[in-house]
Image (cartoon, rainbow, N blue to C red; front, side, top):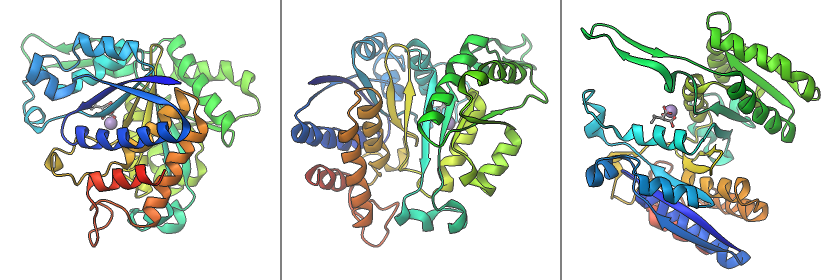
Amino acid sequence: MKYNIATLPGDGIGPEIIDQAIKVLNAIGTKFGHEFDFQFGITGASAIDQVGNPYPDETHELCVKADAVLFGAIGDPKYDNDPKAKVRPEQGLLAMRKKLGLYANIRPVSTFKSLLHKSPLRHDLVEGADFVVVRELTGGIYFGEPRGRSEDGTKAYDTCLYTKEEVERIVKLGFEYAAKRNKKLTVVDKANVLATSRLWRETVQGMAGDFSDIELDYMFVDNAAMQIIQWPKRFDVIVTENMFGDILSDEASVITGSLGLLPSASVGTLTSVFEPIHGSYPQAAGKNIANPIATVLSAAMMLEISFNLIEEANAIRNVVDKSLEEGIVTEDISKEKPYKTSEVGDWLANNI
Ligand code: IPM
Ligand code: MN
């Protein structure tokens, strides 16, 4: 079968790591008899430079028409230190999320045995940790109106807003993930302070009866931040609102020592987007040293979630495990004997 993949390399190391994912997907295509068609679009700072818009209409059309979107990274330091910049690369990401209806960001957090020594936490705390953060992605304080500055510039405000429907949609997905895994769902909120969090709790309480085989608990976000460090193995699926999910998923991603290796999916109403959780790492751009694994594993998530190609997705995960065991890794993992980005990609493709 033929699958159309809108491919958005973006900024920094984006193009290099996307190239490796394409090699790997093509190898999967050859082995399992599928055809992957990659159509390229611009986004992020490079799109601002070319057309003045970080998510141009042509890119949006490409994504809407595709079966799935494979995304590299966006961001450029020239915008980070300029709070007055009128257009920012991140706006492209937010516009894409909103326009494609990408309401759920799925970030699996798992350990790789060969990398446990890289974890900032004790070995016994992280070994076997395996959970998923399900982050609401198109609501909350990221998008609520009104937002802005007072006329004299001395006050600024953002609005955190959720509707019951938005909460139901994401929490349902959380329950479904829990059902497929270890049947435990933790709802993270700040219901002791925020009205939106109380709406979340009330909504979840109304849904719990339909998922009575799932063990459900509620946790305040400050406590969750602590427990992710203290006892990561207690979690199975975490579901939470946009900004809490932003913060907790970064925290979760480093505890396994695998930052740079973790994939993500943003599931949407029009299509879904698959991208590494790390950023555009501009210092490494063009040097052929960035770790392509997170992007390759994002491609595996795409095969599984968007195309239902489970065996193919597992073939990618297995070859990645093998590459880590055999030390075919980039310099962030091995200083002694580092391989180049493209060499890792070639090795993976050849070993599929
Ligand atoms: C992420 C990023 C984005 C976010 C930024 C780049 C807008 O941190 O995908 O987690 O805050 O959602
Ligand atoms: Mn983030």
